[in-house]
Image 1 (spheres, rainbow, N blue to C red):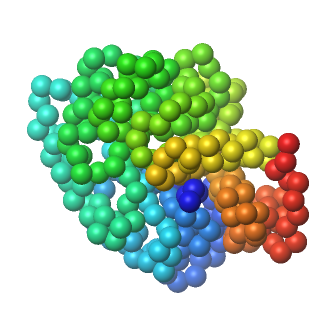
Image 2 (tube, rainbow, N blue to C red):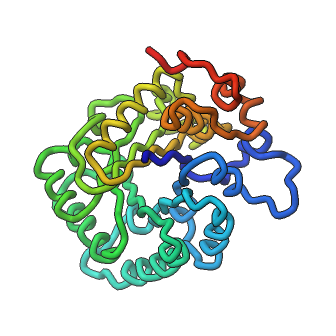
Length: 298
């Protein structure tokens, strides 16, 4: 099985495009996501510490959809900014609190892994390899998925280090650049993770634009088809595979995720909110009984 989901669910510009503007009592976005997809990547935990009382609510919202699993993104204090490798007690305390907060998902058997995402400035060098080792030791009981965005990590010695530390290295799709990761490489762990950031070449490298502009991209049907083939190839080499859409602006990640889900579902109609079909009319072909082939060929 290839799980499909979006990166996050809390975006103001999804109102009226993914979620209804007038919400019924008890509405939660996870109710929508879990009825359409196989999982979600939680990114709020990157910005704020995970809290068990919140995580419990996530598990409760999806209990009627047992196929729906979670990937949780590690807090930025582990991956962005300075970490004192000689004084690890503060980070160890955070790691213990993080794992404790995730217990509701772990007990329910719906936590598939933790995403450890570093910025492009994080290059392969001895101190950074030690940093990966520290994180691995602090979260030894959790499956870890590593996202690195600099090509230096994809040389054979670096890949061997990543594999030796027990990380599943993520495949990422983003605008082309000489120092970006290759599109394909041998797996380093049991999880295949294809994370899609969009291909907005103009905005991605512009330091003056905001997050929304950088991730403003809708994959075309041929691009979705090619990426689905890549995910299928990855799935032949690992125990489980995820495709996660992070091109979140104005619901584009949700729209593309539906397209992936349709392809992996044998081109059978997939459930979708009315709002997303209204925002992306071409989705009517794959979310209604009148689905026609050919959209993703070529």
